Image: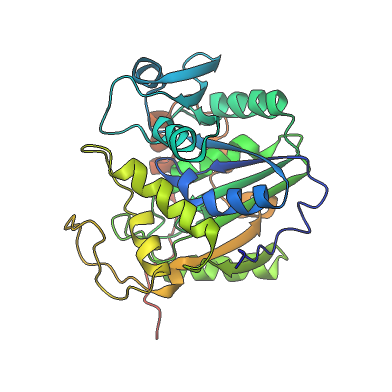
Length: 320
């Protein structure tokens, strides 16, 4: 059983595809089923992540390839000093230990829009990328900035800023995990309204679901478990809900008994939603504000100032 990707026509002529986690943290793991599916089809695919890992610390704790010091490095695995938060190096080590593959997980520094753009430009040139699939664990990348309940929109917007002007013919945004972002207090009414606006604009590229019978899902789950179950390692609050949802759990289910509060696990969390990234960028009201920022701290200051000036769309409940 294959993941029925609706974006294959967009990627038909692509030779070097970059799958990149847009919102930081474990977002790149949410792109693994797409990665495995495209690889199975014979595509040349690379992995990258807007990383919350300190890149210097990653170089001390594991083997890395440095492209731009403190801005862009490739995790190679070979963990020398186990840490409680080291997702990209551990993912590279999973490939090495369980798949017998040398897979570099490119780590983009947790920084502002301008240096992040530089990192993406360098990586695109280095890998000869002709298609980018930004992956968001959750749906807050679809927020525009004019709504209450926008979640962690800053990180996703910085990634959208970074790819906006890249000379890459195909740019796609993929979201998975609708309903997982409890801690971020995402307003899913506003998310659905934004999705509808993107559909009207012709930007919706289709949707598909993970199923437990899919090898791509099983590899995704195995990679996640390998990293999460390293001693005392941090766990993703997004994918620890996606995986049980795919496996048929329902309601207030806690995969690792982490007591993170009530969450409504449902089959909706197993769905991928695909959008034309260029149109998402045009709908995002924060892009121009964040494009030239140098640090995340500056980005947050500017967003806070922007929000104070806005008449925000209120939080509303889905009426069914």
